[in-house]
Length: 351
Image (cartoon, rainbow, N blue to C red; front, top):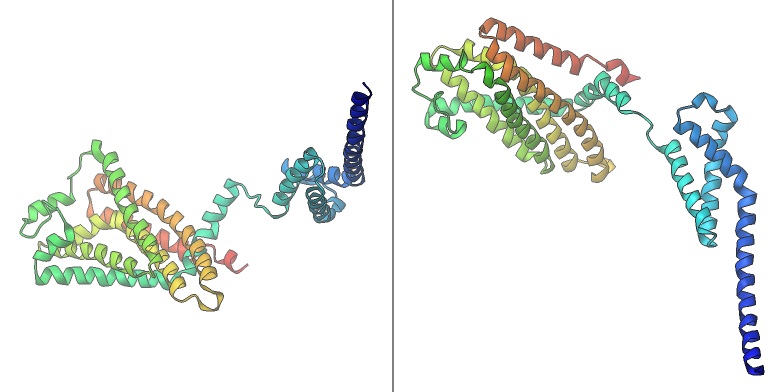
């Protein structure tokens, strides 16, 4: 019996120091929290008002003290982790630190504000910043168009290689057959499906022009030449039947938007490729990050332009059967795009 009592006393003697250590840890945790809880609560109140958009509820002292309170919170969190304070306090401090960091360093711009900034200068400034690449891409398109014309003029066999499976617009087609493809060749009930197909095709070309820029821009140049060669071959075919003005009007109504979008997509790819090949003193990663961000803004706009081009190609071109009206619509669209890209938003870019 005495042995059992001694055993119990021994176990109780071992538990006493353990319970004392636990009690001491709770005491330290409670004291640590009491000493700093006032600053934590004040920071939480400031962050909550910022999250609710109640900026006017903040005093000047609150705004000035926000960074100081945040640094104090981070310091407290570091101590809490190192000294293994209670889990609930540590988790609460982590959540408050994340919320405060976002209010100090995160972007609080809503989608509406971002969209407004994009259209009121962000997109046009990004295009102007790639001015050299835009001119290079445009020059390649012009050269590719001329090359396509010269190739099929020298050997009509090139037409099939450039244009693929064309069945009506082919060398040897009569003037009437070719003219029929320009006027009244599409039923109105199929316009929506046609517009969807054209948008997908043009979007694929533009995305490829941009994506291939990461190979130092060389595949982008080749793709621009290939697509411009198709345009040159088509112009040669209709010119041979005296339908040059008619085919230009047929292409113009949507082509001014579509070709400009493809030019910008190619320019975006070249912009990234040039940054990789010639990063300058900034280093390759910094140059690519800068060029990639600018090119991404341009590509968002390119997608919108392709939507417009698809609607013009699938609807307006089929519904407007007069060459003069087609030229007027296409010319007006070109003027609007050029005015936006090269005249609009310049004040903001210098500000």
